[in-house]
Structure formats: C-alpha cells, structure tokens
Length: 154
Image (cartoon, rainbow, N blue to C red):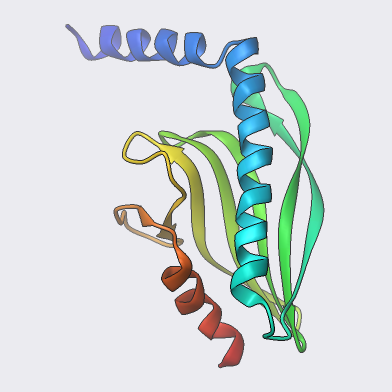
C-alpha cells in the first residue's frame, strides 16, 4: 500500500471515529474526566492552603466540523502563583482530550506539560513535558502531580 493510500485510509478511519455520536460521547467523557481530575486534586490538596477553582473554556474542534463546546479548566492558586490546567483540544496528536499545564507568576506564563485524557497507549490520564523533542507519555498520578506542584514552592 502506498503512503498516500495509507494516509487516506487513516483519514477515513479518523472521520468515522469522530462522527457526531462519537464526538458527543468524547466531549461528555472529557467533561466528566476533567471533573474527576479536579476532585482528585481537591482531595490531594486538602489542608495545604492551595486554592482550586473551575474555569470556563470554549473549544472549537475542527476535526468535527468546527463544533464549539464548553468544558471546564482547573486553576490552582498559591500566594501570587497559579497553575492553570487548560483544555486545548479534543482530538489530535493521537490522543483524545488534551489539557495544557501552565505555571503563572508575576505575569510570566511558563508551559510545563500536557495532560492527555486517552491515547492508544492508555485509557488513563497521561502526560508529557512541553518543549522540543518527543518524550513518551507517562501515567499522570498523585506523585507526578506533587512533583509538578513543587514548582509552586520554588
């Protein structure tokens, strides 16, 4: 099979996976999984004095015909620092559901990593650092979360 034929086959498979019913189910799951992630963070951060709140985000998903939908982001606050978990897309990079994690201090925003709701490797949240070069996605869990949050104390 030629490279073009393989590409066109994959494109057709992608289109059939992201039909109206499939995309609505993925949007619903994305919303639900972000809510669960926030609940986990609230439990992990209980008693720390780090504030947590939901933010409203509107996404335009071009791979499902430019559909606009709303989803929540997560914002953590500690002193004059924040960590934003912002949804950035539903489909792309071989994953379903992506959130960018950004550290904000003194007006400077520093992207740290991306979280992925579901990928071919895992149905759980995974993450990879932001920046040049490819790194494999790893499971996002409580230890990874606190390792990431240690930047708030620096």
